[in-house]
Amino acid sequence: MKSMNKNFGSFRDPSGCVFESDDSIFRTINESYRIHYEKWGSSGLAKKLVEKGWILPFHEEEIPLPQSWKTLRVERIPFVTYPYEWSFKQLQEAAILTLRLHLESLRSGMILKDASAYNVQFFKGRPVFIDLLSFETYKEGTPWIAYRQYISHFLGPLLLMSRNDSRQLLQLRNFLDGLPIDYISNSLPWKTWFSPSILLNIHWHAKLLKKHSDTKSEHEKAVRPISLASQINMIEGLLDLTRNIKDSNRETEWGDYYNDTNYDETSFQRKGELIRQICSEIHPKTVCDLGANLGEFSRIFAKHADVVLSPDIDPIAVNKNYAQVRKSRETNIYPLVQDLCNPSPAIGWMNAERKSFIDRAQCDLAAGLALIHHLCIGNNLPLDYVARFFYSLAPNAIVEFVPKEDSQVKRLLSSREDIFPDYHLEGCIESFAKYYGQWEPSPIEGTTRTIVLFSKRLT
Image (cartoon, rainbow, N blue to C red):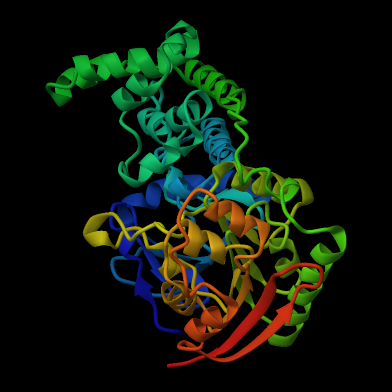
């Protein structure tokens, strides 16, 4: 058995914890959860959820781990994302999955005790629930204790993205336990007070929490027993509400990027051919397509690699990318919202509960296609800083250098002074050569741009 390490972020669950090895995830079950786990199996719920693809397949292992009554082996998610890195459609599908799991649990004599967005990951192109210890035996009259969590993690953020701004989801970086309901209520437009469902689930909910915030006992008095039939009706109503929330569909510069480039059809195809050729040479297993936009080139990488990370700063572009993943049933592309100048940090308890983007994005090949001018000219980053960033991610790098003669760079410089004397192809190669031992430039015919492969990371 390979060495295993306890997952630092699994300390909150009293029912068990998570251990990791190189290729698998092990979830221990404490004696205190035994009755619920046995009910989960005997009711047929566990088998049904695996068959539906709503939870990861698992099997029991005879592995002695600390304080463990039983140990489960679960397949490892290739790349872990967090809710504040998702697009609207990703959050909405994760929300729908959570409600479906709760409904299926109720119909099997159980209840979903947690509705945290962190319990959902994306695996083979679709959302999947990963917390196998979130199912408990249902007792008649018990309300859904995770209702408030669902509002904070799913319904509230979705409404804010729809009625306010899609970037509102980034606030989950600041509120790790979900958006406060009074914050959601105060941030929604006034006209949402005239929507009965939003009024009930958000605005009145916020007022009720404020009224009963003095003591826990007073809050408990406000929570009344609810019959099974009533709870099912309530969850079905939440499901309809969640499904019917519409994305703001606000078009952005990057969401419509490929309709505004200076490539003609021939040069665009040549760029794709160069990328295919490089992939055939280095055979990367994991690729990070930095600034992926709609994922046009992520899909080329996906034909050569096992896992392709597809981050972009624009949530609208990421939303379109994910929609294509779902439509085409692509299984190895991971769209996510990521500002490379302010990437997701390590946050949570001791800054270790949620890992940083750079820690998670370690790969064989880091690609920056039509990106470097935005980093250097648009964000005042020296070429050496950009090279060091690529070096921190991968032993191989593809950089599409876009010179000052290019129309896109001219646009960036049209409203500002040119303070970038070192921004040229030779300067780019010189900067990256500090970190990579080999480089191979390939001009893109019909353009002023050059694809450069940097390899053999120096130590």
